[in-house]
Image 1: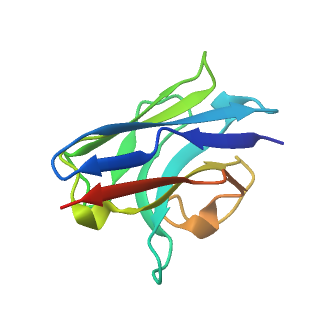
Image 2: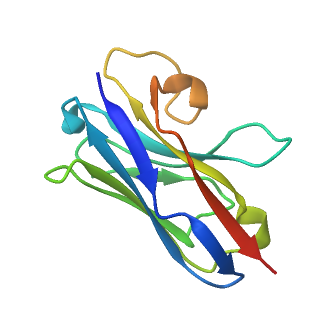
Length: 126
């Protein structure tokens, strides 16, 4: 129902910043809760941040709280993740995900999202 494409990843030094974008198409963007997840080699995919359909409520993993900001522009069908003060442990493939209104599972778990982008690599050097 919806297709997601991430962009904005890259290589940065520790302490630097990046903004990730996720462009949605093929569905009504405002119908979906949206999330960012990340996965490092050898590790499970972990929750980073999430935002409700109209953008009025956000949640963050403790490891990124304050440093990262999730936002959305429903008029542009785009989700964002502003990442500041990046650390080497932030290195991972970052995925955006959409949670349909009829989908089960947790808002804070990858199992709770039924649409996924292809991922974008973020590498933070020390």
